[in-house]
Image (tube, rainbow, N blue to C red):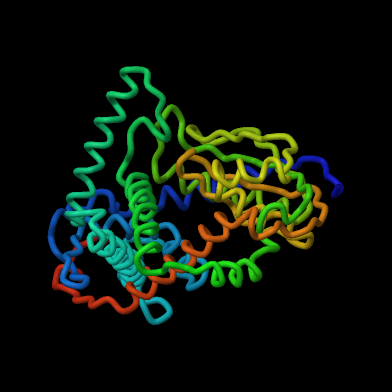
Length: 364
């Protein structure tokens, strides 16, 4: 068991600096305020990408692009920030490029779903219409007191991820049966390469978690998510430095921290965690004796970021193929499906329309 230092308090200056950066993102004309609408900005294999679609992905990258240009290129945060050249490009060009890359990836994924009859209309407007329909269903379920998984109501950001994940689960199985069709020999060969990452790789692994919760009573915002992400990474960095997870004298409104005592991952609990918290399971399995603190886990369904710290481990034998055959197939399909989507996105026919260079994000 590693030595535990006395809990330290994260400097309020760190929190204020993070808050200032987030606030700065909002005093510049906001992506959210952009009247993007249905204006076509690009075509991917003939299917239209709208300005609203591009603005959705631009919003997800806005904070990281700002931080990169401010810290790496020394750009000045003023009214000309987005259009000023720095390092051979502008923040706006970088933001557009990242947003377009993500839009292409989603469009090709939706096109595959349409090919297999899992989706019909794959326009961005249809996705938002499905969100309204799903929110109405959830509202009715809440009114009836019925059990509900996830938030009481989706916002655009969270619904897109939810919908794509749900759609991909259906497409993957159809594609795996019709196209991939792995043989037992292929699965066994694949198993040999990943068997040390499968349960029970360790007969016993103990770990602690710190959850930074940004969804309160079903409510969340992008600003809270960004700030929670920064806090989570600060907690992780302290653990990586061998320090205890810091105590907070105060937290921004809408964010809370939940610390759980030591839990155990073993042959009995691995299957349950794999199904109920796959991202945390994979993060724990990716850790090592030299790297006991895996990357921060983004638990979108739970509205929180999770920082895990492995406190003890005992090496065990790899499981027999017959016992983990279903898991092996799942991982095999997942990896090949991810590669399929990547390849389709890279080879997609993309046509940029005049609207792509026009006020897509309201930042000019």
